[in-house]
Length: 114
Length: 111
Image (cartoon, rainbow over all chains, first blue to last red; front, side, top):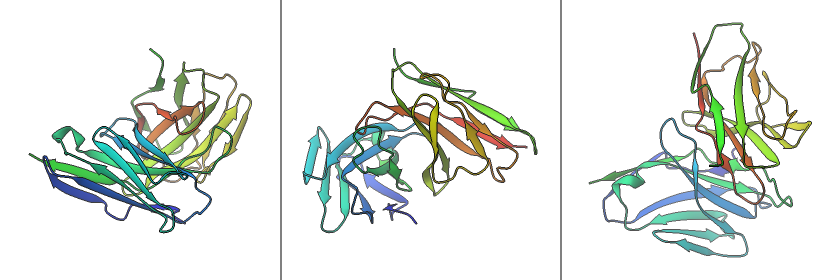
């Protein structure tokens, strides 16, 4: 049972344009969401997060949007740069007063075309 | 600099052998995790530990074992009972909300 889904395994975007990565979840108990970026043969690195009490969080070129009623979140990268080419994982957790387990999606491979 | 060190980076295992993957952190994090990455399957949780001398099974614990004798260390043993061990293994730690720090991973291949 895949509780966090990323339905697009890959995405190609022209440099300078907006990249939009999508994520859907089924567990209504999830209340914290994160995006991680991963290069081949490396560990994921944290990008941006959002709590369920918000619907938007912005950090530089990265913005995450959360639609709780649709159980959907998205990551917007603008403008897209060649260094953004990587696999992006969406993750979610349930409040557990710290040390929560993260449930990850299957990832979306983003390729930025120069 | 604080971080998580996984070793070795590449590991080859013969059929029927047990192998142990090392994970050490100097971040003073209480919780540590082991994930497995397979193509098209994302990261799946194998085992996790929220405190020394305690650990819990994740979603795919069969064929694996762990120990947590020290706060800094969380080794993972891939036993011969794991039928499909070839994968990329990631260790992570956290002290709280979302702040996972990952190691650089170990690629295990059965030969």
